[in-house]
Image (tube, rainbow, N blue to C red; front, top):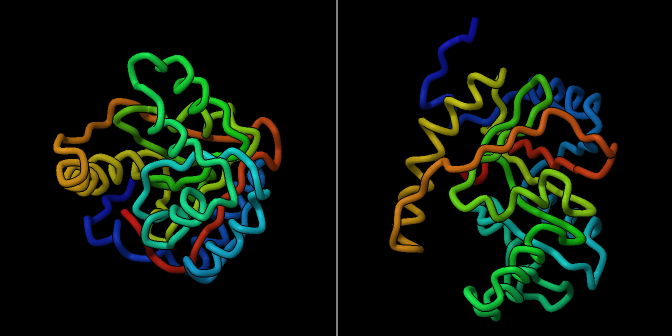
Length: 209
């Protein structure tokens, strides 16, 4: 039976014991996990994990934007930004090339909408463009996860997506794109079949949605 979770709880950082349980479960499921103090530490760690010159796809993420990681990966010149290359192509004429670029970067970097203490990552998307790389198309995937995204189980994770994340992302999409968002695609990563391919940087602080 799932314990009801208040909307406030979806913004509260998980306590240390919860982070440890989550890290242990993710590790048992084949993910590499590091618990870091804050977004600044994650920003430095991402620089270590992503080789210079690698092709990198970043998901649309408030966590990446607020931490400065998005700017590092897409605007520093140290990496081959898939986003920058995709925007330079004709979205009609070059649709197949854009699709292939998005599906198989060297490294996919983003966040999640929820992570469970049982060791699952939950990611919702309107376009689905980042999901193939997360699911296995990228040679490596890295997720930066604020402590408020930790929940007990999958049922609560799905509630967090619908009740907390969607309204916030909908407001962001309206402002940035001029159109609403939607949960059109939902990816649940319950294990990593290639141990170590996916790295979760689990923060002790809250950041993002």
